Length: 87
Image (cartoon, rainbow, N blue to C red; front, side, top):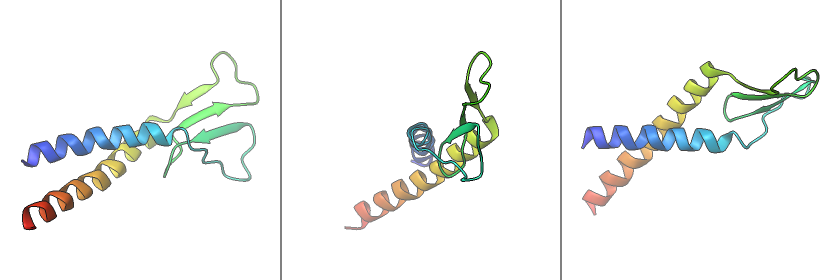
């Protein structure tokens, strides 16, 4: 049961992280790039001088976001299974 919760939480965390890549997360003083992802911006689109490919991925923030959302999903799954078995 523990491995199922872990697996589902990691998959759910990765899916939520990818969906948060659609949410703009720009600091007001930053000009020249659009940042996406929540709570940490992990996807960056260069506006000024994009060179060849304007999209950049901050791998550290991506992994941290996946971990954060996996913990959230894991807690929700654990609580749902706990209350389901209780009632």
